[in-house]
Image 1 (tube, rainbow, N blue to C red):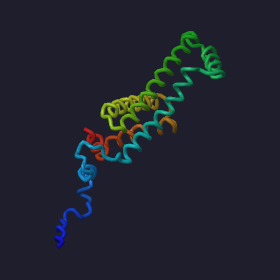
Image 2 (image 1 turned 120 degrees about the horizontal axis):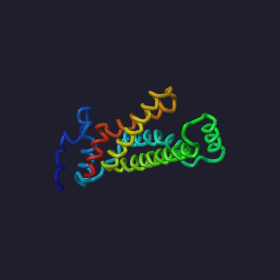
Image 3 (image 1 turned 180 degrees about the horizontal axis):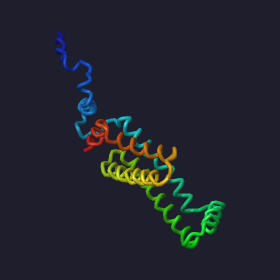
Image 4 (image 1 turned 90 degrees about the horizontal axis):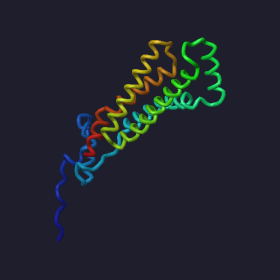
Length: 181
């Protein structure tokens, strides 16, 4: 003799509606049976934000590398331009300042790349560090565009940095960031 099957609960069979979407990650964690400490799947906003911040850091990386290393003909051309401009400082001092600026740009770009990809893990301190470095980049770009004529690369870097930070702080990204506690 078999026992009748247990009654199914209607609440367990319904599909989530738009009002329940905000707790989608929490429900997945509850359904998995591992409790709230289980990491949930990373939302695409986190990947997009990290990609945008990485793309915003690439021109800094290239420019910093060129200024720091001053390879071949570039270094010679810069020295010639400085000496022909009649600058009040010596060409060697200005080249040293350019190298120091290049090293600073390289350090900011590398730190931004590292912190951005660590923020996707999720690591809240890395996300905060990436946000601070993206803000430093945005302020530097804005100041540069005020002094000189804005160009497409600077505008693109500024927009990518802002969009990347915004994507890392969207509600689903926040929920994912705090689900790993």
